[in-house]
Image (cartoon, rainbow, N blue to C red; front, side):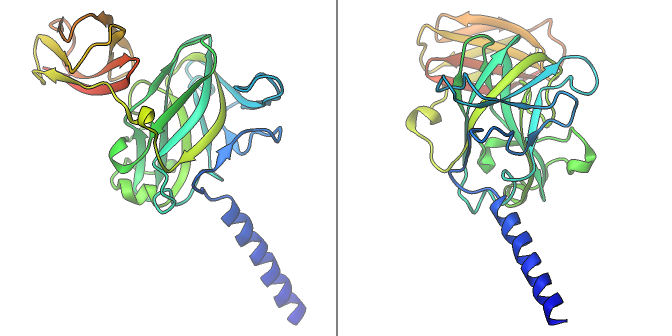
Length: 289
């Protein structure tokens, strides 16, 4: 009886320690140098693989590779997720952003992160466009309570639509990186390849990482015009407008601080207006009546 009890206590301790070691911690980094995928999966036949060379540091720097076919059905969406070391209490760890190196092939991708937990599903409000064939890019996605948007798509088994962002940040059960220009829990259907490395849990942001393009939209809502006012223009500013399904419906360079775009032929609904320049990126909602 005593031997059985000791065996049980030992087994329980090992399980508890193993569980504790897989919970998220501030500053943790997945660098894939152990030649494994470190618990990242995509739930389809297009499983991620560890590539042993040509990472951001070049040479023998390993990275994670995943791809999507773009076809309707399994493997068509670009999503990769983790339910081990990227779960737990992000709030108490002070984690406010996720930084990682990413490279895109075949088509441009719009990377963002999404989480689910006790408070339901949430997606990062911002995304970063990674140009196909442009090499490795380091991106930072803020995930503080004010940086997340409630979303209700995805499998019901992964939680309800977001209703308590602090509840989810306090007990994340599922963490994912995906491509979608619209705040979402699921990736877009896209034929693309995504390479990831050095996925890091940040507790602070540098000045450059917190910069955003300062602009306003007016009137909003509007029936015919989308007017953009920039605080300043660095001569490399561009605007992209996406519908709620993630389709880009308009793109152009902005040459001045004030621009008016004819939106009279756009369908009524919600659009995402993305402004990008060397300062950074900012996305805002526009309602077409």
